[in-house]
Length: 112
Length: 114
Image (cartoon, rainbow over all chains, first blue to last red; front, side, top):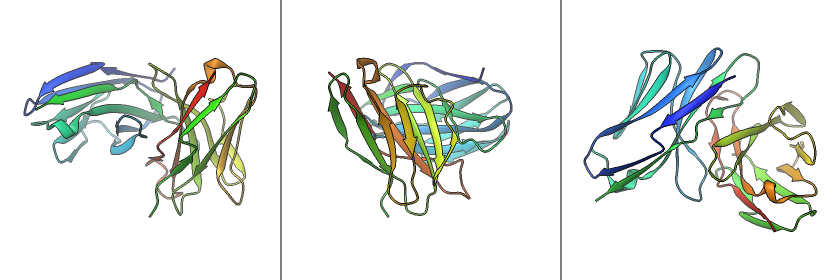
């Protein structure tokens, strides 16, 4: 069964204190690993898609990397506005389904 | 360019009533997905629809839940005879035919069953 596990569940950082969020996955035939950001009371906002081991993508203070078993979301010198829940999801298998399997998220709080 | 629009934002129903949740995808998007987020749980896939077709409903409960995406108008997620366990945030997402891997989510409908 396809599964996504994120750690830690919650993370508190001081402004400027860099860290990484982990997403471990088991999937039959990875067709993409996705990172989303979710603010309270809102829907997830797309950040990155990674398709193959070794791939990296960057956006401002965020950098996502992918290996065969896990993905990391690195946050460099975070600011309070980076506080949010970060969701990891995978798409697997074949066919035309658009189904994503989400992890439970890491809630990040960045204190000034 | 409006994003994915969901309404209502909040819906309160008593046990046994029906709940109808509406979703208008982004302009130009023909693929709609419904997800449910229960308290303390992650987002769970429910159903994937294209215009007038259900493509994958593997995440939909077998009873009381149905979804449609008609040729004209929004997609509707319908829950009949709601129970307290149906209380959750329901999110709709859409994608274009050419970029189906990139989902755009609405702000969700928070359903509360009394």
